[in-house]
Each structure stands twice: as structure tokens, then as C-alpha cells.
Image (cartoon, rainbow, N blue to C red):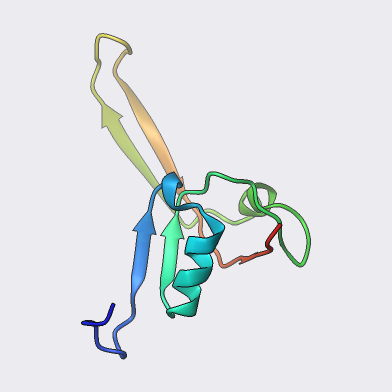
Length: 92
């Protein structure tokens, strides 16, 4: 981070292994946004849990991806739905 200009927006994109509360708070302290696939159904403010809140977000994009057959599954089309929003996580 020390080599990045202060005026540059920084965003970390990570998988489930990054869903660690101390990491998330340190990124916030550094002014870094993050997008991650969650591992934990964390509490959110003002009330409730993350997964229930995410299920209320409206779909913004929808993609169809054709997947070829493998020796373990038949060919099919996966439908990906993208929703997003800002949440406030509450520490345990």
C-alpha cells in the first residue's frame, strides 16, 4: 500500500479464506474497500444476519454460461445472478 498514491481507490477482491474479521477491520483502517465471498453468516447492523440480508437485494445482472459435459456431469447452462449492496458488519 505504501507505493500506491493516496488518491487511488483500492479494492481487495478475495475468496472465503479472507473472511476473517481482523483482516476486514485492518482493510477498513487503511481505507481499502473489499469484495469477498463470505464464509460466515455474520450479524449486520441494524439487525439480522448477512445471508438473509443478501437474499433481499435485487438482481442487477444475469448471465448464462454454457458448461460442457465432463465425466462427472452432463452438459448444461449455469445461470449466474449478481446482486450487490453495502452492509455494516457487527463484531461478535
